[in-house]
Length: 279
Image (cartoon, rainbow, N blue to C red):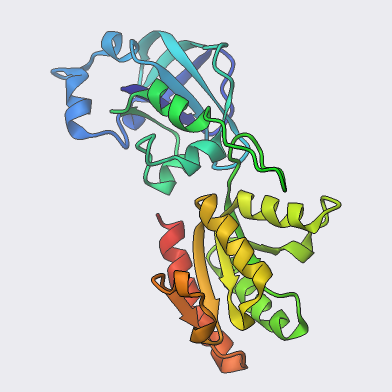
């Protein structure tokens, strides 16, 4: 088990307070009960657990692993003194969010509420398996050593031809409705080789929408990259026959490239994206 302490501002002063009424939020009832002696909280047992100190957020905020050295009641708050484990590097909140099920943090709202939870998870095993693992590096393009998924980023893989411009605009508007930011490779120029920009965009994305219309080989290549990297992939197409044979077991969204068809496409994708965002 480990303590998860989340607060609005960054940790690091070595001393802080947590409201008593926020203790044991997002904690299994039996676990919470095991750290109570009648009406009293068994702080002495609680602080023996390793801790993750997090600032609210799912992006580039840094979380630290450490221990609570002292805890005591001060009115309606618990005053704590703590130290960080300097042998464990800081963790990106985005990395924790990407592996939130392993950290027993399935609800997105837990990342935006100050609280103190106790998780029935082997913290160090999770750290070794997920956040500290190294990925095999490809030779054709580069990916970062550790995943840095942007929780609100959606990428669109589709031909750049003019007829697809209104389709991309539909994807962009739909993403905005559900709080996501939609990007396409031609929106960015960060590397000399466009393939590197495409791969980097896919690697950072939480969701990748791929348009199989006209059986574009580049899009098929990008679908393979997205699946290999474990991204949430949504296939769309104007023609069902354009879905490759080895992908026909997957669900896809068929649409017509006219005003009414794109409106229906947006509505269908909105429902799917809302389900993904809500976890």
